[in-house]
Length: 107
Image 1: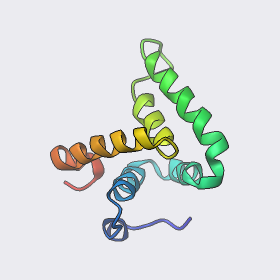
Image 2: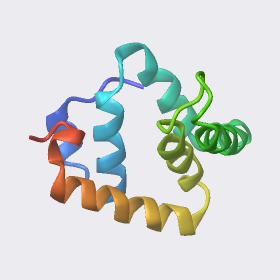
Image 3: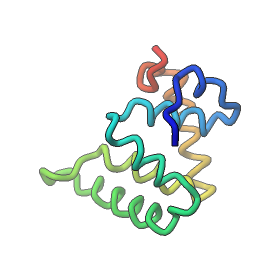
Image 4: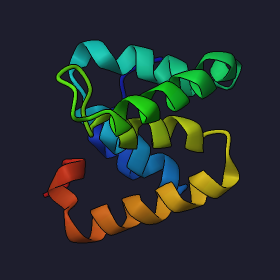
């Protein structure tokens, strides 16, 4: 997938997709292609277990290798396929866009 510029991302009409793409743009360059691949419809077989494992790892944040950063990433991956989580993730991202736009690279 070709790298999108922030100008192209801001033109995306679907609010959820725009916010997710803004977050992906904030990732390190080497992490972007795997995340784009995981978001493709045919990667569902890996996206669901990865999302669950990331969320479980986030719950084990007291251990040195795991961290709370794993929880939102797991939610975002699972929200691709679970409508209820997609709605909740979109609400969370809407709050972030409104209150903390610099987290999405907008500030």
